[in-house]
Length: 427
Ligand code: SF4
Ligand code: SF4
Image 1: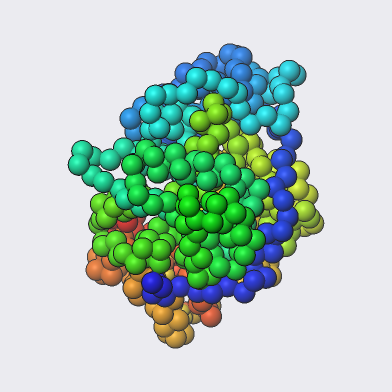
Image 2: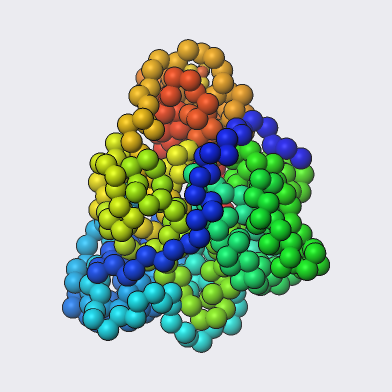
């Protein structure tokens, strides 16, 4: 069942999908945020001057937060506060790589935990679709709750990004193994892999790996943004509406990004989550593509590795629709960094006044009135803005994309959300 609103992108907006994942070398230093989930930082377990091995736990995991690991072998040189891509200030550990570091490793072996939630917590797994919510919290259900359907989300969360597609092509068996482990954890009945229908090669690869649908069913999704958003995905695959204020598990379904399923598979083999695939793109980039990057590498270092043709007019973390603009490039890559876009002036047009065409209303999959939300917010009329349900906005950016006046609507709506103190449930 198709979801309402949304936009179809031209194929040119997925330009680097054919470039295989390339591992970047290990950075000379990393700044690893003690981020194990929203709310508060992990308890730090290392001191300045301490030597750490790649994969060592440096931030303690608990019921709320996933553990944080050293992503290179080296010495803790500073304990500092960093700015996360979304703008929050967060405690972090700076590690200078030691001479003995083994380049290109993605983790070290260790004894697996007894249960999947414990393992996910120990191995530092956050949802890799961008939300970076702790997997172990998503896996633990209240007594009596039952999940029957597990959906692996292979619909790229944004145009320009192609990391999930490359993972589906290059790590097919591992993704499936991770998905089946999640299925077994929930004792669920069905495993689905949702992939946009214009990703024919990925659909074929997963169909082959599932033995023609015996182990999991591939669902070819309409190539329409924001198909990768949780509620929209569930509606398309299962024909099920998730009402306002209800979590997906309350309707019997659990959704996980394909990269998260891969992380589960790696965790089962004893590897913590130390790196992720990041799409680096934009007209300012010399060698755009999909790169495997250590968590804690700075955006500046990544851009240095891929090369810049010119100074970017705008630097975004994430995709063009929901990405966060960065004031400087000394921000670390985190587990939620799906993309880095270095855009030229031509790719970032200046906004002009609203012409009240209502294109944003037609595009909104949440049934909102983005022009009014922006209008009230910019005038500081937050009570009026709150009456238009900003908490239901999934921040997909479809409204901004279709706006002929290039209004940055989603930024205003984020502001309205903060002011009204409401949030859409994403867990
Ligand atoms: S799409 Fe842009 S110009 Fe049209 S009504 Fe919405 S905000 Fe105004
Ligand atoms: S208002 Fe929110 S949900 Fe609606 S199109 Fe804009 S960003 Fe997406």
